[in-house]
Length: 457
Image (cartoon, rainbow, N blue to C red; front, side, top):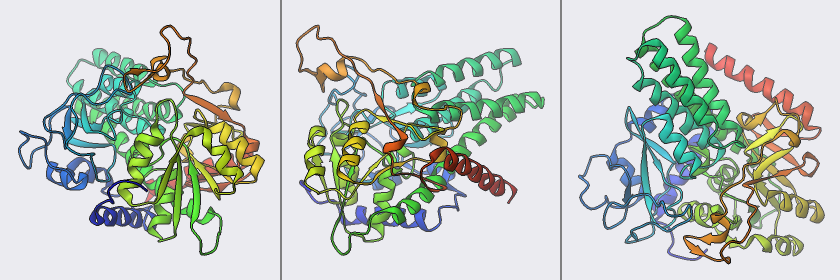
């Protein structure tokens, strides 16, 4: 791993966080309150950077503040992969989750487009703020998208709490539709928005007042965040048990895109398993696909692993085949934006070629996704919508054009990995094996029973 070694205190934080979540994943009481009540001083300590110039110590950073930069900077807008408008004094360090509450009615989310050069926080006060940041990739990763969308809809419900019922109903329903359409492939988005909308409808039908309706929506959004933390901790524990036994030598893993806390909300999925292995002091080395064209692997995964002190090597996407052919990979771990009922999986484009290569070279290929990313209503890959992204993401890198003007571009954000190429799907209900249809149905039922039991307790 190149660059300056991370501060040991931040590495200790990473290990402590992993240990708490893996050893007591079912105990999520207070998770949401901790996120909401984290002060600016605590956030700055966690980030390992100084407050931006002009920011008062002990007060929350304002909208668009780039922590660690010489002055507050706005989010990059010229290009989705453009560099921040003001260069930071140093690469931002510290390990943290993608959002926190500044106040009860303002969520601050990390602008993932600015990493690793600057750490910028953007405000979400309405469902429309959330939809815009999701659509423009400031927030990404299926679980994180779902959580931010749920909170955004709840915040809109709070703003409409004193409106007349007809106006409130129109506002909430329209906001929900707008949010759900922000990115079509990630199933967590529609699922989370649907849960908060259903909480609104139940409270409305009960005839309670507007503030109570808003409180019901917020409570449901809070549950989604807490459940994700629980689910991802359980997933990491199951995934740790499924990793190949390579004896005393270093375990070599390959991953694609970003699946850490930035994408997961609080913990992560595929990188959550790496986190669990790191906490268990199992020697591990991660090969990180750069993940073109958006470079989530190079910009985000490498950054998260660096803060954690996990040895890693960044590789061009096209080098993965040679790495596997040389026998240098023990297992491949990837995330998922949607898993169909038969196990077909939509994930960041470039995942399918890895699965083909893994099958060719006899390397285990694991999809790592909570049951919330399973779409039991989608029979197979044919019914999964594949989002197509703007051409500029391919013709430009950080605002610099690399292709001739007018070049035709096809830029699917995701591809489909057929179920037969998947060794196992690591979930919060265990590692599912083929035939996936039966194991997925059983896992969905198991999770529902577990949730019902938690509510009963």
